[in-house]
Amino acid sequence: MPTLNDASPQTTLPLEAAKPPRRKPTACRHLSPEEQERILTIAHAKRGFWHRRNYLYVLLGKKLGYRVTETLSLRVKHLYVNGCIVSAVHVEKQFMKKKRDRPPVPLQPAVQAELLTYLDDLARQCGVTRETLDPETPIFLSRKQRALASQPRIPRSMSRQQAYVVMQALYAEAKVYRHDGKALANHTLRKSFAMNVYNGTGHNIFLTSKALGHSSIAVTQIYLGISDEEVAAAILLAA
Picture: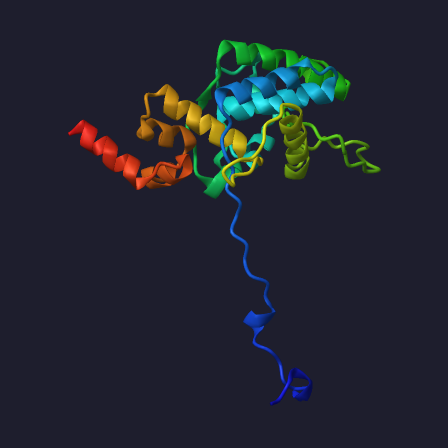
């Protein structure tokens, strides 16, 4: 019986055989309200600018429901206009997934107050005042900054990897763990926002889908983990 050693130098294996099997993306779970508050409390108790940044990242992740890259694209101009914190956040569609526009997300007064305090911290970190902050300054400043001869410091936002490390440290400190095969990842905050809206609207999937900027109700149903059996049961109750 011929073996691989018997093959001629010209013999090659099919390309597909050389490819590793594609891994299915790991599903992530949402946080319960109690877990959300525990993480926020721990993040808020820490002192120093970088901890304040991390706290705001969790807070806005819970309140805005943006995807990670969308959250990290936030600039001063999105939150602070004409000397005031905006009442609703709107990010240009070029920063959104599939360049799809999303309605402005309203901010609660308590969140506006937190943002105003943070912008003062951000300004001090950049060596300016809140009024003179460059509108293009990233809200979630990275610890690592590029330096050029012509421009010694160019502010840039923290990366997805940095955000992941921040969140994993907070999950660990808050004793929040994965379960049912679902991990804790960057997307966990957006899923938590989705569940908060879904429960807060009395399980209105249409409003939840709109809040998430989904293209269809079917996407939201999968996103929330609503089974066909649950949909059927709801139909029977309504009938």
